[in-house]
Amino acid sequence: MDLQAEFGLSYLFIAHDLAVVEHICHRVAVMYLGRIVELAPRRALFAHPQHPYTGSAAVRGAGARPRPGDPARSASFLPGDVPSPINPPAGCRFHTRCPYVFDRCRNESPELRELLARPPRRVSSALMAANADRRCGAQPFAEA
Image 1 (cartoon, rainbow, N blue to C red):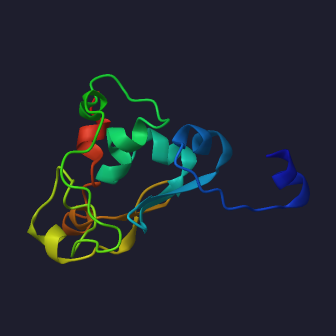
Image 2: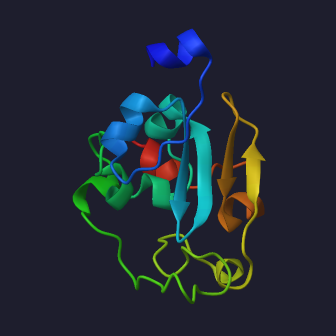
């Protein structure tokens, strides 16, 4: 991190180990089957994930600290079928495993949209687009 500040460097760090990502990165993009589902500053992403995949135990268990009472804490895997990355499903690529899936998810591929939040972040979710005043995935992961 000192080299970044001293020389004005930027870098792209790609990893599956979110424990490392949490310590190295300033901004984090979470991907599912080759698409970004959430982009946020590190602290905001780990404290309050907004996409169901980011908030899942499969992702958070890889380094983030689960909060007591978090429903994702008891699950160590994501339910549903893992889609083929070569032939991803129509609509949202995460819909086969999402606990919040509804018809729109199966038919439309959500765009990465900016949330009106501080700090700013982007989330790709039909649930967020359908109900813009409610943060996608916020309720299950925010309750303590």
